[in-house]
Length: 398
Image (cartoon, rainbow, N blue to C red; front, side, top):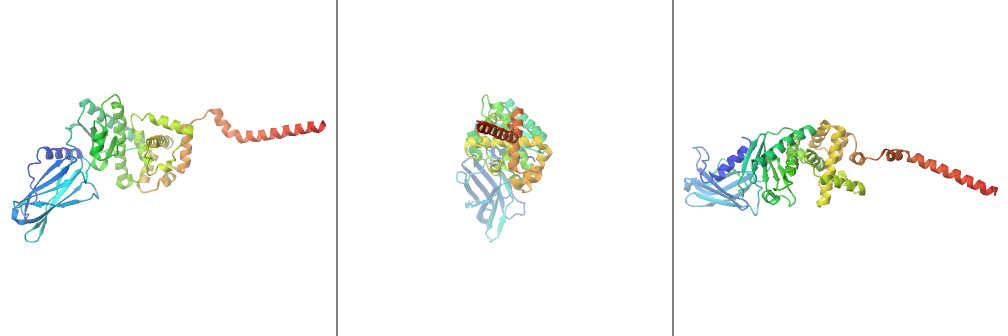
């Protein structure tokens, strides 16, 4: 079943079937386990179960973990009642989980004869129950939203489709099997759902098969759809191209640069940031943007602007096949500085210098003078010497 299929199954489980026990285990199991889960967004997950026969269980522990690789497993001893019912509450305010994750959970029981029994595992989708989500399928995309009409969802699906085509044309991105896109009506709701920084307006969770974007209503919404959706989709595609470990080894300037060039409506502030840096010389060295971007707003803006422009320069100069190879090279664990030398044949500082010259074109006269200035200087020195000699000659004659 595709990811969004699991989402819908989880919603049905939460909204329609959370009060109906799910039989666990085969008939030969020593204890029948009937689980129930009550989930309150941002507050708690209440695990409940009914064990039959009730007098055969002396201890019950519930285990649970998010459905991604190497995730931490949580556990807690359940309060066990004489009738065989048991419960345990996970406090989401103390140990929060992001919304929309799939949670696996199971029970380990200690029986009266001293043996233990581990139940089969069950699944729970932690949906953002604060909103009533609508959905629209546009394979391989599935859009979920709660404010706006079907036209709004169609714009998101169209931007994702065009963004995928853009990514494949520019840097040979892979074709995803399924991508869920969740559109929030304001950044604060998105940030609280996923535990993001206060400035975040989008997030990609490739391991969850989903993108999350904040698209407030207003005159800028259409442009933001065409910017944010392809940008986050690019991160999703890069993850599937490079793999989990390889993705985290990509230089940040390349990761964000490819995401930025995939945008259908680029950020208009980038050009102004680059022009200011060119006039003042206050550039951020690309070698400083390998592992992270600045935290301050102006520094972050320049970092994104440089990354987008430099990546576009690499695509123009070397082509998508070479940039595709660069991504795969970094995915193999090659260092930030070593990767460009290995694939492009030049060190990063020299590439940065060439890129800066390409975005700050000089007039033909200025370019010619830059090549002739040593000869002009020599000519000036010779001329000065001749004039000095002539002056001394006249002085001696006098």
